[in-house]
Amino acid sequence: MRRPELRPVLRSDYDWLYLQMTSVDVGWRWRFRGATPSPEAFASALWREVLCQYVIVDGPTRKSLGFVQAYSADFRSRHAYLSVLIDPQLHRRGWPLLGVYDFVDHLFTRWDFNKLYMESLHFNVDSFRSGIGSIVEREGYLREHTRVHSTYVDSEILALYRRRWLEERHRFVSDDSFDEESGHSDGRARLDAAVKSVSSATLDALEPDTPLLAQLGLDSLGALELYLLLEDSLPLDLDLVGVSVSVLIGLLEQARPDAEGERSLARQQIEHGRSFHSE
Picture 1: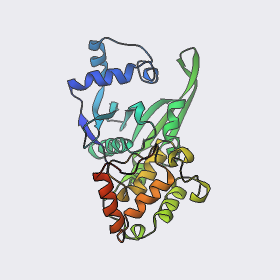
Picture 2: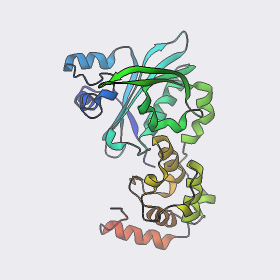
Picture 3: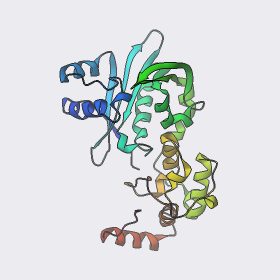
């Protein structure tokens, strides 16, 4: 399973974090709203009122994927604020959000918080809007609250409750074991079941040679759920973005217990640099 890890923030991370939080393209979405503080002011702000924070890294490559932070903790009222940053190049990949899951689980396990708050610009919520009402609750909506460039935009106040998290966390847990029932299903049937689980679409309505995620229009949370449904049968380093329906069916077929021939062929193709890919 391709699962990111959480690593404590080091001084060597400051340059990467500074670029992520102040870039012209996406820096205005973050706390500095387009400003570029001095390195000293940035480092001070990074640790202000922080309970704990981590860099999300890719396990095999150690590449930085994102950043998570808990701050303004109120232990008497049992709540804290949660902040999340994912590298824009990984937008809607889904699997980097597993690092966010691990962080949320860490907070609810290590401390007796009743809930975690998130404050977000309205359009930032689009990346996980499918979770509102199931995992995340909307607690407030501030109209024309934040000025971005020359326009006022709405802000949303969201919350993750401990009780809801404990009820729903199984959706993001994998025991890394092979599912015998789904494993014996043919690739097409298994992908069709996964698609129906995360969307209103059916496999018959999709174009076989077009990337699956592009056709489903899933947000990051939906992409993560799809990834978790199929992960035990997919290559560890596979990125679902750009992978067509027909290629996914082929990969799922190779993972069946009775498909040793196909798996052997796939291994030979990988060794010769001809592994499955999409344009």
